[in-house]
Image (cartoon, rainbow, N blue to C red; front, side, top):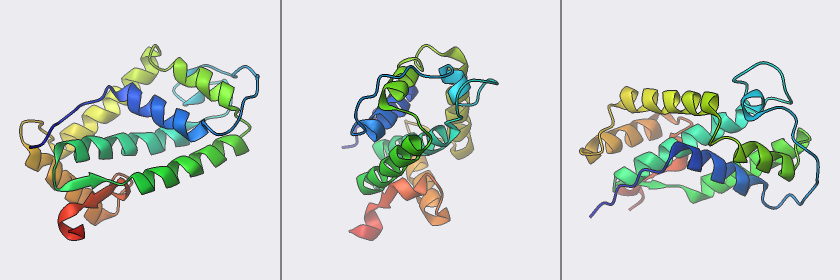
Length: 163
């Protein structure tokens, strides 16, 4: 029996980025810019971290698909690869773990960021006509993402092909 669960969008973004930075160590420097500045939703602030957003959104979409389709699994190996690469890039950009923690703590309350995330997720759901009452919509989307080799598809495993 399939158990669909729908996680709040900010949870997927916040936890994945936090995991990506967990092993970086502590440096007590205050963040530059606001969460909306950092993610490029407004002008100004510190360095743009849109590349995190651009990785985490497909990651959360893949989780949503795999949670709702028994034939599609989530690739934790690919998630770990992506998180390691993100951590390296964030550190190369000079962002400390304390800065990232402060940024991500502010995302839940950042209306502009939440609107952007909700709009992207709604567009994705509409694009694939995903319906939690019809698991086949998730299976079809997952198989199409896998066939296309998309950013979402790289986090998915077709259990029928693997089995």
